[in-house]
Image (cartoon, rainbow, N blue to C red; front, side):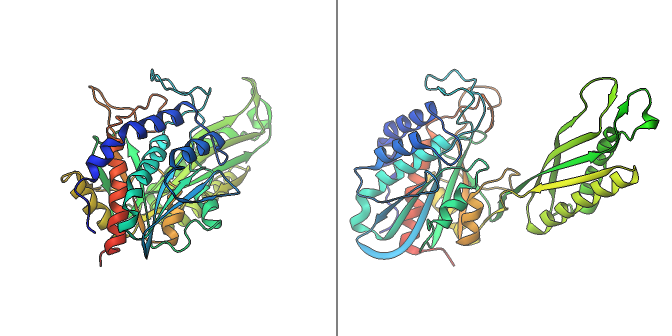
Length: 396
């Protein structure tokens, strides 16, 4: 049926409703896989649309399906719902009412835009061939929510999947994405160096683990730049060092905690193996012992080429050319990566940069705010990419 010219105007009419839902979710943020208040807000927002609902059992996930008049393709749109365990230090009237919890990554906006898209698309059901699946997902912030929903059948029968992630670094109406890796994998590791404790005035009678830990930090940075290909990079960061209790005691142990980001499974595996080898061998050279624990996280988020071209084409039409192909991936991570490992699809970044002078606060900042004008474009884009996918499928 083609892309309706009025789609953006229709989304703008829904803007007050979308903003209201976003603000109510923002004021009551929830963490992890169990989001009862957020789930209830979403269900109330879509309860009159005639969607087929599946409430997931292991999590607060919702799968809502809009069925067209005739059978056809099945396209999935994802919006994540969970917040971050951090304080909010904004002056918003609807700032978080829950201490130590904040929607600092824009998931409140993602959820509201997806609900808005469902309302925008519902009147088109009589002209649609196929089905649109709205995946309201909890637990994106490190809790593997997408994986749980996939295990419960969220992707069953889907031909393609699309998702948006807001960014305060692009102006409202801009959409950026790229073919191939768009976000990195994310692993956490911990190295424990075991020495021999004693009096700080007599290090020769001890085996001090602290300088060994410091040497491991430097050796890992050298490994990163000398063993990993520059054109297939990783980011390895030691974010925490902990050892000792007071000034005159050499501790028995020192701990390093860090994160590993990669843009391919090849470099990821090479770096994982290198962390064990470097830490263990440096420690052995100093008569200490290093124990390495690796906690694998999300895989690389890889956009399908055809789905990315569809996303960019639709966004370009919708925003009058404000769709851009990103020159490089972002080293953050997303559990939409699990969806894209199963079916073709793409994730894009939607601009919501607030007005005013100065550099905007990025996602995960305790002062992050966004321009809600961007929600108009996000709502319309969800609807537009779904309709285009149902009509013509992925481009060849």
